[in-house]
Length: 592
Image 1: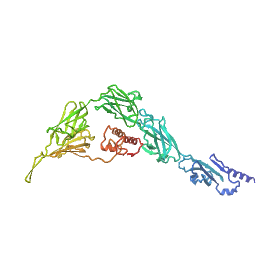
Image 2 (image 1 turned 180 degrees about the vertical axis):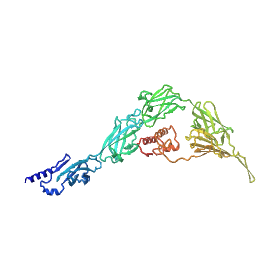
Image 3 (image 1 turned 90 degrees about the vertical axis):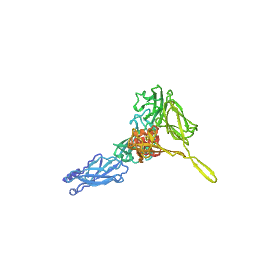
Image 4 (image 1 turned 45 degrees about the horizontal axis):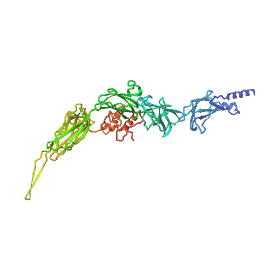
């Protein structure tokens, strides 16, 4: 009996259960099998794994490994996975340590692996807490021109109003802070899915109101990644919005050769100004000059260093050309010029069409003579002008087709010759009709040419044109494969009158002076305004100049510049191109 008690005590001691905070134990039955039965049957225990913190408790796979064996179970609706009759000891009688792991539910953080031991006849309960994944999105703003939170000119970066949209539903409304941050918010689980966009509702002071929604995304190296495509790779992403500053130019009217200096008033002086917030100009012979580079939003001091005059003007609208006129400047002297017309038959010529061209070949006036004279207004004294005959009065031919004169230094007389005509006289004598015809001058035919650059304004060469050789005089700065504008003017004088016609077309010149028609490239690379085969900020600068009328684009460049594909060239195209360059738009053209 005494021996039996010792054995029961040993058995009770063997059944002692130990556990930590993550586990709880359930004792086995108080009835004990005989010692001979325990020796015959290996000791086992049970394991119950509970999960928590997930929206859906069922269907999560739990894996238990120990002593080289792996056991799996799937949680039920209560979040429990049950493992029955797990061995307590290995073959050598050592206690087996089990490792518990779960297959991470989608949208949650990985839980740390857990370990436990099991006592014979006992049930161990393990709990696995799950933590939902979170993703932080931050949106920073910066000035497109300074590429920082420092604003351009007198603009103010903070302020304005922006709305963030998720699947076209407003997620929140924010404004830019002094640190350039628009907002920062946290998404839980798979909330990142869907379309995320931000839209400027009101612009900060001095910035252009774009108004379009911009898809949220970020750069991974040089690759643009939309927020909803692969954001789960990261726990934090910062998106940058570039604000387009309002900018414009000054068009200054003053004396020719006057020196003009322009600078941002708030900087205090020209020398303290940033280079992007000041400009210098020399007034051209026309009495005007327009800045080349854009100046940002703000109030500017405009100084005429030649006359000492000073004035202030503001740039407040995007793409503006602000006029500045110095009242004390002396405008170029202008006068009217009279041209006299004579004819060898003594009559007063009336009719015909003439152009007046300035020294640069630009047309400044068109007229028809009346009662033997014509008055050309608003010509500058001392300047040289050319009169170009388009069509002579009916029945006459001029001595030549172009006439050059200088205002106030000479009088211009254009002489005409009467064109001979055919006359017919009829007499009737006793039912016999006799017709006498006066012999007319033979038909006279001539062709002249004018060669212009591709802007169609600057005359490069001119002269008589031989239809046999089809050659023209090459310009001194002739460039192979460049396009030129050729005008062929044909004049036919015959007894019935005079016929004039002109053919105009773009041509490619050859080294021997011959030419062929220019075959236009029909492909369009939107945004490539300077035709260098790529789209960058230099194209935006040229497009701004074209939109303000400072330069004229050729046909191909104009097609490439139509960034909103509406068939017109304007400031809207420049805005679209800038939006493309700062990734507000991801492709060109942007219609509507």
